[in-house]
Image (cartoon, rainbow, N blue to C red; front, side, top):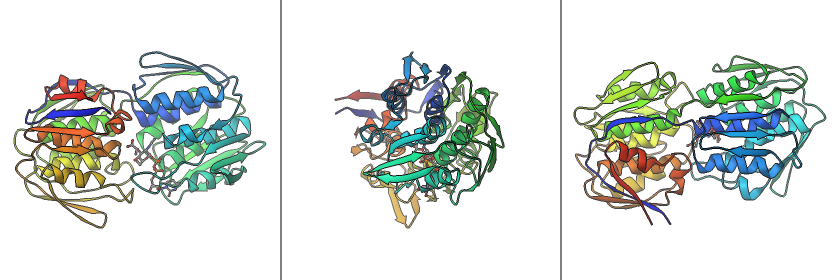
Length: 416
Ligand code: EPZ
């Protein structure tokens, strides 16, 4: 099994381009199921999850022609509106096929996503919303089975802010009869990028980016050629790595408008951050200062950046309180960071991070995607060698990370 070997202690420096956003690409690929017309998606990150989504679509009968960072999709013929367990178990985001399939084909059979390392992650709000739109839903042998002659518009209040729940219902509502109002909707930039793509396909959507989204259903959607937005979590990860290593980096193609909460915390840690029209330059002259944070739905501090900031706080001056409010089990990286000499206490859903002057390299294990990013950051800071096992987690969300960090001067390589 592949591992990453990192020799720490080098301040990152140089320039790196931010890749397309995984969490925008996945729903946008699923949206191809909503139309019989050709769909081209560009600026796709080369990630396992993107490959899995394309395979899932092909499994249903969608024709796909993949290029390096783009794919052409033809969903004229969907032989089977079916998302099998063997694919869904590798990627929960497969649930994003549910809304489009039942909306366009009146039927869908999608494996119920199982448990996840970071939390229980039910999909009850997806099901509740589709039921409100008139779908008949049953769970049989681990599969969600949904049927509807034609969905109808509905007013749906979501008890909890859910990103893929909002995306699933917004896609389904595009082909419903009448108007749907999604209240307490997710405001994540990826939801807005999906809405932009759907509007270019002829959908009538308003309010995306706010917590009330209105969708007026239409009879059919057109084709589209969409460029996926840059990845704000990847961008944030590079910035946190630069701050932790006391480096100076420039991000190009950066999703500047989507990084406010992260940049605010980096500045509070003592970093100089200059924001251009699509660039972000960060310079951290001295040791970072400890910064406390509380994760929240957008525009709050993203839970997908929590682990990376714990790694930065592990070597910061002072003590930081980091509270996780979205997922109930998202501190798996803490035990591994302690192996590198970090001093962190867990009290309920808060990590109390006592900054230490230095970390020391060791063997550690990745447990989920963002946890693995925090181990990479800690390894870049630690003296000596850090070896990270189970990096398949990392490959799900970061394209060729060792090459791009190598570009910034990191001593990092993939080993087996
Ligand atoms: C999306 O997951 C992202 N994934 C996650 O990124 C991200 O952590 C999460 O949003 C929060 O920002 C993709 O976009 C593919 P949620 P999602 O539904 O949509 C509860 C990464 O690292 N909930 O917004 O699955 C749920 O348990 C990944 O790239 C219900 O109770 O997350 C959680 O506590 C990890 N019922 C909260 O809502 C539901 O039906 C938010 O989850 C749905 C969700």
